[in-house]
Image (tube, rainbow, N blue to C red):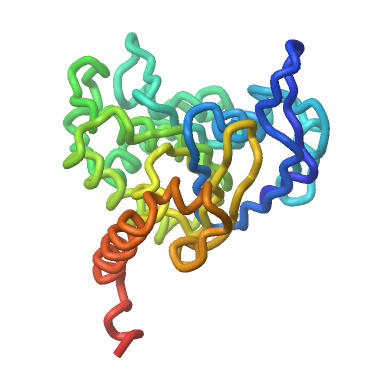
Length: 265
């Protein structure tokens, strides 16, 4: 579990990016951070692995304060996926995926074997293993990014708008693949997006942020759609028409989930 207790990030010019945030990201679930540009969602994510240091407050992972840990060691134990994948252009796909295992001192054969297994798991043909990132499509590169984040089997994954740079059809495919993977792996995931449709589809819980880094609402997607906390959340969801559309889309997504039809009979 990731726990934020009274966390604030204030920059030297006085700008408050995150304001007194208290938030729980449950173990084995996807918590989606969503909101307009400048609301502090990416700052919140990056404070977990100390790419950004909080001004005040405490962040713990399974009860251990992240600031008590060596930053490099902390990051090696957390999967991190970003927009455009962030792959090393001079490394082959198999070596990109094996990056963290190499840093952890794994034997090269073991690291590459694990990388090949992960390629299959994220839906990539292992024949691509010796290719370079420029030889892959955007969607394939994002799959490599997910595989790389999983390579050392971290319990926690941070995902910063990982699917936003691809076209809608590829994006849906990546979302569906991600849901399938999470059903098998049960990672603790903090996922940032600006897309409320994506948040409602992927999240076990959704945290909606206002500009200024204020948490407006944190609830399950169904609770969010049924009872927006205030006018800001309602408008962010798209007003009454947007709520109806999101409910309809979520109902369609849930029909595809294993066991849903049987459970609802």
